[in-house]
Length: 259
Ligand code: NAP
Image (cartoon, rainbow, N blue to C red; front, side, top):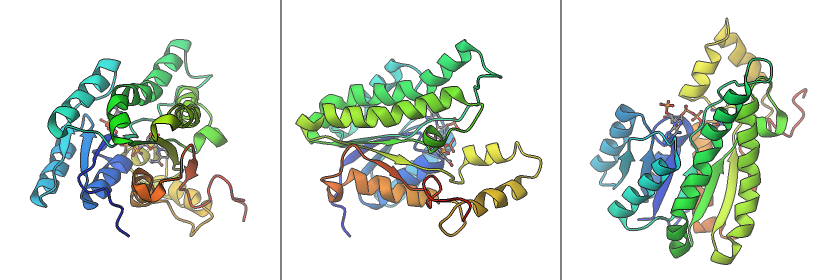
């Protein structure tokens, strides 16, 4: 299926590693131009070099989105280089384990700000360009916003906020023809996930236990499977889909895990 997104410009926060990397690759494979906003210098350069070798334009903005001015600058650079923005994928985030027992009010606020602030900032600064292009927005959430996890209040509050903002922005932006959706992963092997697994005494055993609880095929979701859904939502092939929370998780969140 041709997604008809050739030469469109999409911004991906955290687009150099893990799920974001798969999204950047998928966008490039469809002939669109990924703008990767990610502090990872080596991975970002490797990706843009790889795309250039295939004749695909792309841009790596080596930046961690930590304040509104970072998002403003990233949007300005993207527009300067490409002249337009057709979509924003809010993806960057990390499960930083600031809980009730082990956290502090200050650490909680910092975690919410770190995981939620730049989702708003990116859309705020890209908005005039999305209005012109009738673009779209995809927020990457987490099943933890629905199921809870324990010991990670800040991350969960941010993930819940992202899902609420998906609905809120879908409503606010109806009049501009801008669609807004969320894609919700559960268990995807990425650098972030690997480092979390390594905190267990026997990471392989832990992984096997997790895989057994994933109803569909008892396996992890691949980053590519998340990316495929994201890129479909970025394309006109999903032209009447907005305000949706789409779980790409092998049934992990909603099916009976005791099956
Ligand atoms: P990852 O492996 O850590 O990759 C994320 C990338 O984003 C890294 O390159 C990271 O750089 C970068 N990044 C982090 N904060 C950033 C910021 N403020 N500005 C720009 N770049 C930033 O993570 P992932 O597992 O792919 O997760 C991606 C998204 O999926 C997150 O929103 C996460 O909550 C969500 N998710 C993942 C899973 C899963 O199973 N993996 C499950 C549910 C939800 P550094 O490494 O330098 O920080």
